[in-house]
Length: 324
Image (tube, rainbow, N blue to C red; front, side):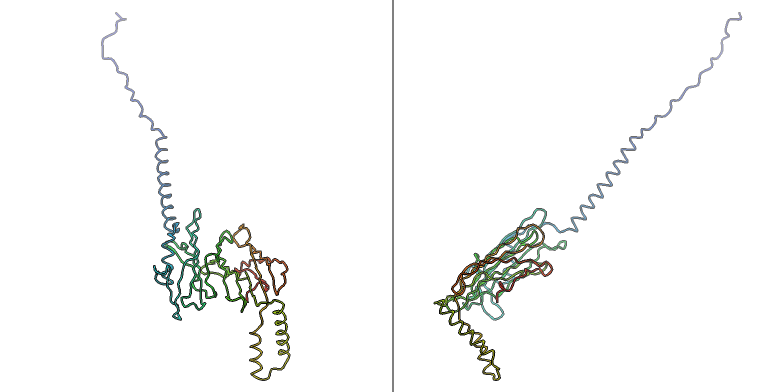
């Protein structure tokens, strides 16, 4: 039978091996991203560490401890009995030194600054009183701690400087300063008593004298009209002596003595000042006004504007306000 199929070995079809699964590329991207983030994190940590090691740390000043340390180092031991620091100067004169003003300035993102003023009272009572000012701030060098800028010995006052004679105020966005009223003379019936404004402020590594100008003058010789007559007589005598040819040593001494014996005239003058608004990095002008009586007559009201010289770091004080 031709249509019958002969039995035989059947031919097997080849087995198809499935292809290996394709690797997904996103896995590689995740690894790359993690590696990049890790590198950035290491770099950021290194930058933070470097910045912390090179920039000065913000310092909070312990006010009481800093003042005590500076005062003890400058003036000696504190006396519980006298309530102040006892200082003996180079001429072996003892003084009692006390703090008469203090202020700690705190600013956002900046270290503290501490300012204080002191007054030294002569324990001999001879009128050789002094005053001083201090600034304690962070050192600008990395890891420098605190530095002191000070002018601790200013022998300019016949009367001790007291707390009510000190003003501490902002002169600019960067400058704080003191205005101290310093007195020369004590007896207005026998001498002219002058009260002057002394303006001091830290500048770099020193305390700068920004200005010194009149604050008050008092003289009370008695009868003002008679005092004016005596002064005019003295003035004419001095003028006459100046016109003579002084050929002898005695005449020279007489002229010098006459200059030193100028008669008092009545004075009761007061100068007030006003600082400008703080609007920039440099101090603005001072406005000074005067009122009172002079030589027995009312003074003409007058005002001056004292401009600040940024190069010299001083105020330009006119001759009319200069303290002799």
